[in-house]
Length: 126
Image (tube, rainbow, N blue to C red; front, side, top):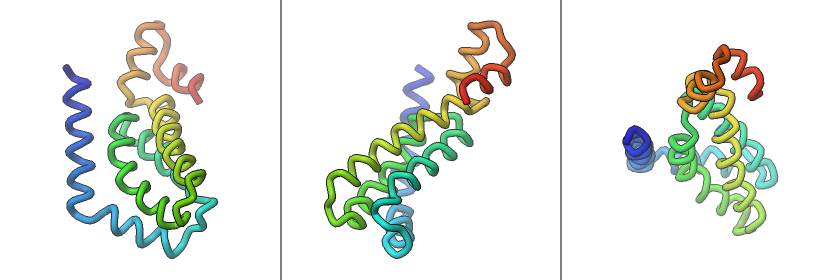
């Protein structure tokens, strides 16, 4: 049940960000300042830092996908390789940030189940 609540809240945050125009603002920032080839790397780092700060990979995916998918398509002029790499960067960055986040539910539960210190477990994940 808690996972369903977290997912619904993440989708709600993503919907709010889209409604207030965060996706359009992000698109304007990307279209004028980033080359298409650097977008997957930028997206990976953005997703990793957001997941690290929030402790949720699902929430990060729900927030970042609407922000980067359309700009990735526009900046790359429809290049499928760039768009797919950007989507993969969202997924991998979100999971990587979640794994090394000391506030992630999975990290806390894993350290408890293994009966090891939380920060020692976080260190092994990085």
